[in-house]
Image (tube, rainbow over all chains, first blue to last red; front, side, top):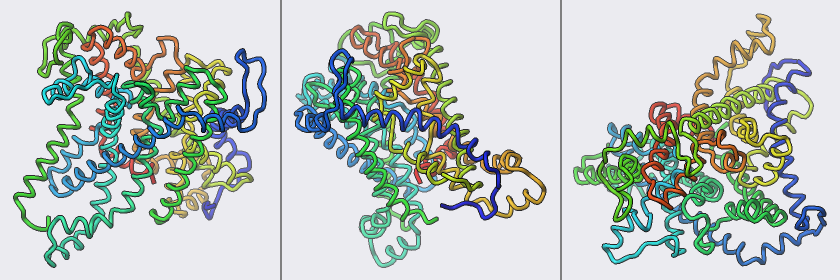
Length: 294
Length: 282
């Protein structure tokens, strides 16, 4: 691994410099992670007196559990919908801002601030707008003969968390798409225009293929976001309900561990989540090594 | 612009204005709600035009809070949030910049191992190790304390990578010149490397401040004493009780206050914010 050509020769100083970070990493990251792996192979009796080693029983049990498979399905639907909806809207907005030149900066400011809104606050904002008794949107929908009640209807609850989570992520995707668009050389689009290609044809045949590294990167980031950073949104809007319709993997770890106090099952779920994060991180880093030229 | 197409220009602006409106609407509705009195939410649809109770709602929430919902005054929760966000941002930057310095400017046994240990933290977001981390914090007696709120979130692989990346681009000659002039490692770090990293530190600070401010799950688990509630987690209680009885005006006043500081940071430090966002993800 790279260092400087000339280095300092102190023997103890580098350890001192690293110590705070490593101590925190060991105590609050690696140790708890190992504990999770350990207790995922154990069963604790109801009073916490005795733990027995049971190999993969926790895993086989959750993988056969209908509630777990249901939350796996929910997570997939949720992650794919949020990614597609949010990236689609952001790309449209970024293309527009890239087109308008000067006023683009004002539009950018007006579009990026939701990045700073906490997920749980996002959840409350959307929950308020869609509140079945006084909400503005249910009121409008009633005019069209649709009755909205996400407390009863699982599909509507899922739609609500998808909308809220996508809304928050627009700002992030927008910034990266805009940066990607701005790095497409003008000479290419100009040459295509001289050859008679209209704006839409230019976008799909030249700009969009050149954006593919950004698109791929955002794909991974968005899946990661939808899986792990949306706890607050779900907790504030639906709390996993109605009837588990919006229970995602991360929410279930919390619900089973803290509310249900099922240590072994919750740990096994944590370990599965860690494996998912590891896969996502590896994909992201292998790809990033190619994108960024060091 | 490549060619002049007035119709397309018009459409572009139409799309953008619609986009801005969609982004702003949920917050507009919340703001309007925070300016009304109790009567506005009893029946029918929520109001869409400002009311006249703005000052009293905000001052009531700021000074007294909502005891019926178990929520302390907003100023207490805002102070806790600010404190937590600052400790996390400063702490992450401090431990990351020294780690990166050690990894780039020294050669010592276990250097690569240390690097990989830091890298692993990327793969362990707090959401996947909730229960065991909670147990560690409880065993250390750090429930209901600022240490418990911040320490488990403070290790940062991304910040360490960012500084490492930046240090590698600092010209070798600077270090050689400093050595010739007799500067030791600490003097070189303080007088040369830190000033050079100023923009990077500022950009990272903006991102990490927001990261710290919006934390929800962790404070929810760690704090049972209302003196340590952060505003982002306190809001959940307010909203839950607002749904039971029509207290939306109070809950939404708290929502507005919870959004204000980080949103202002993004708007007024947009250049640093964008730089921080793009660089930490590399």
